[in-house]
Structure formats: structure tokens, C-alpha cells
Length: 99
Image (cartoon, rainbow, N blue to C red; front, side, top):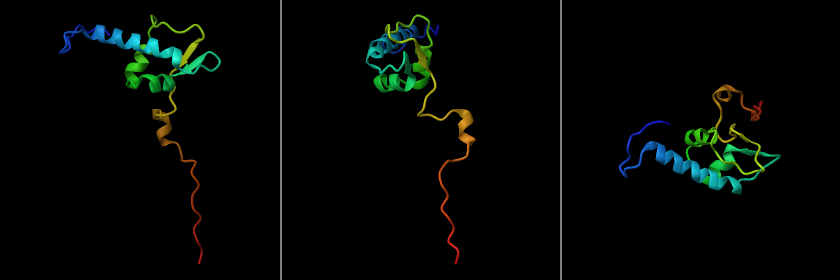
């Protein structure tokens, strides 16, 4: 983000983005790590930042990760991706009663 728009508080967008990045870096040590991988959902639970902002922060090269984190999985389980919306439901249908 390279916008230099000022917020009502006088901060630029870059300064706000940097503050969010620091907040995410502080939350990462509290996120559960499985085989060196953390999920964006787990980070979201700790930070409650919007997914698009959180994804932008986690993709940054200058993000400082804990030593036990090798990578961050960006695929979410809570929001269906665009391709999954047309998938058939796995829910059972009720049987029709014959009279």
C-alpha cells in the first residue's frame, strides 16, 4: 500500500498498515503451529482483522515470523472459495413416503 492519504487522526495509510503488521507479528507466537505451518483462520481468531487486510499483511516479505513457522497457509476453511459455491451438497435427502 503506497497511499499517502491522511486519516482523521493525521496518520497516513502506510503508518496504519505498519501498525497492523506489528499487531499481527505480536499475535503470531500465540497461534497454534502444526508441522511448521499456521493457518490464516488461526491468525484471524487472534487478531479479528478483515481477511483481505490480514492476507495482505501475511503475504509481505518484511513480516517477522517466529522461528518455528516455516509457512502460512492462506486457504481458509470458514469462507467458501468461489469454485465451491456450486458444488453439490453432501447432505442426505429425506426419503419420500409412499402410500
